[in-house]
Image: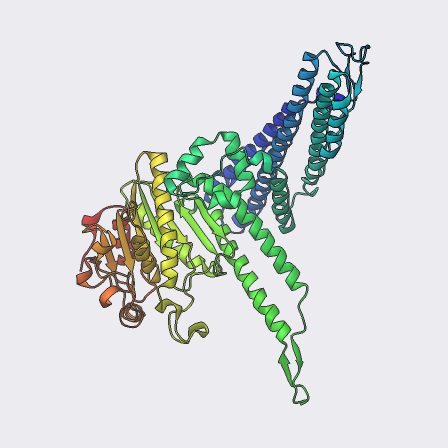
Length: 604
């Protein structure tokens, strides 16, 4: 970039453009939200049958277009802000050098060279001549110029040369910024069609990574989240950022923002929707590529008998990968269906508070709320147990939904949010020999011990976000099914001074094999606020197996034992999975606890 161009350049023009793109992103977000939370629910009420299915498919595609626009405009806005930052830094250096030249009565020429006058005093009987210094940028060339200036009889030369070098460095930095950002900005464009494909979302991921790397200097000016990542500390960090800083930080770091406990639910939801869309696109692209390269399934058997064939190892490996990818796609389709179900029979807006298609154990992670937990009068966090994975998340999401409906119906007008919390590596097997495990994973506490502190962090963050939004922590119930109750027990035990007990009002467990304690009080649960229920059939096998075989309860004690100190609720569940059956006593019992109507519960 030459001297005249940088002199005339106004980096604020790029900031204005960035603000324009940010406004477009906000409008796209508002349009997407309006479609998902107003138009689609309203259409569901006015249309029936095939018509509503077709309409919703088209609305989903339209909402996807707006989300894509929102995300890409956010990335472009951050890129323009980063470009303005780089150019502004170079221009400040130029302006400072020019100001120093004028103070010396030097002349800065159109090419950036600096002309200096004849020397003020005679040297060896004559006045040293004036001249022009041309700037250089490399340290070695600058050293040579400094040495030359040292021997020059005109004292102005050294000062002019130093200023010329500063001008050259400023022009070089401006040129580097232009060369760095021009191709990246040109690359930030979508296909000329109205279809947001899986490939489009993989391009978003690539675009974001490229801009994030190029914008490191600019992003360093935005204070990152605190190292002591408590919910309260994160909430205060978020409050400290300006709207512009928040937007730039989220556009570059959607996954980390989406996972940050203590941030507002709507902020985490927006960030995780981007993560969800990008990972959905990437997974579908992987699956499509895999399907196009299916190896031969069979080969002749070594016996040589006519027609005898066996499956090839290559196909078996290919099919295993196909099943994993297809399972993830199916799970993400289930989550999308929940998004689309907003408004159906009064179902509130969904908030995606955490998402990873793979997760630590390869089974994914999903935290999804029905209704805003930051503003709800009552919030229930449901922790599922053994066998939970993204590919089969539909059952757990359905339990959370039916619990919301029952709690909303029985809640006397209070607002309710129910959260499915699947953010740990759940055991894959509960019985010997199941899924190839001689000893079932659910016999051991390791996965609960690992997931417990993660759950505590979420609960702390949920409390902090609720206090920030509503001025109070609200009424919160942690609900654990099966091994999920063990996770809650380990979450309670993971807190030491000064954390204290779990930030919940009630703990309710169903079909618990043990909570790593022999008394509720040992978990810091207040007397009268520990609830447990048991089912018939195979539920007894799970509970007694946890007691005698796994030892998940301290001193062979489980929550339904009188000694544990629970309010043991009456239940009509016929087996280990029937606690959330619609119109059941078990479900109503949970709803009464969730909404704080303890007097309406039925205790054994």
